[in-house]
Image (tube, rainbow, N blue to C red; front, side, top):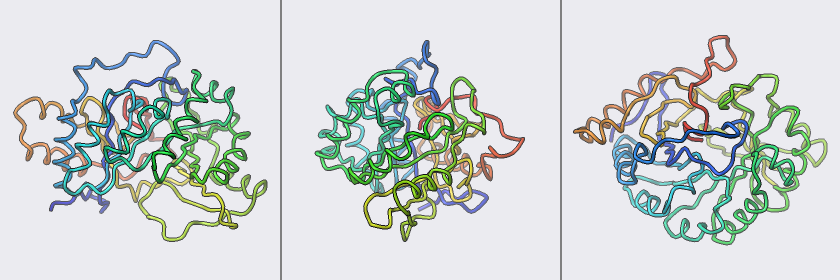
Length: 330
């Protein structure tokens, strides 16, 4: 089997697939508040096209898939896609990132289709702060979705909370208690320059080290979890009394580019070798033309070979991607 190894020696085995750019929230760090122009349905990859890309990718060493959006659960009958992906030879793990608003109604069928891992985006633990972040209502629906996922048997369930200086400091301690009370891992994600309105500033980043210090001071000491995957984006900690697990995705203060193992497929079939890439490879053209599986494989390999050393956010060379997060895939 071929392997996707770039010029810096990084092995890529993780493919993130966006199934839609549509979303039922309008989080400020991702989307405009109003008048969002979504892709026409005909431009989105069909389930059959997504499965074909994934199948070809498995021949190149891809073993992990994660479905994203937009909000993936707004894509109709998503469980049918998951069922097709789950039986692909070589796929060892399928995850889904969701805001959970539609999860209560879909949790059981997603689990039955073969999905086991969930990351749930939740930036605040009260309705007022939730509405400020998302510019929509839905806090209670999110909590209901989390409970439904637990009842369906999903494990692990991780809560993703974006950290923004001047906005989320008062959510740190509540999330620490939430992790201890629910048994779910809370992951704090440093605010990244992927917003639609280009309002990101480095001074707005609430650093992982500050959050760790705050949790230690107000709840109790944390220690690194042993035997962590060195290629995972999160660094995991647990409270020393054994109750509660916290993760940090420190994309800005502690970039993990040199251990990155991920490539991304946008909802309309563009392959990206980095979340912050300025270049894309058009796989839809091959899928809807006369491209063979070998052509698709060669395009994936070429994209990985062109991958740069890192995102350069901390340098003057950084250029924010033209696409915001919802159009790339979270």
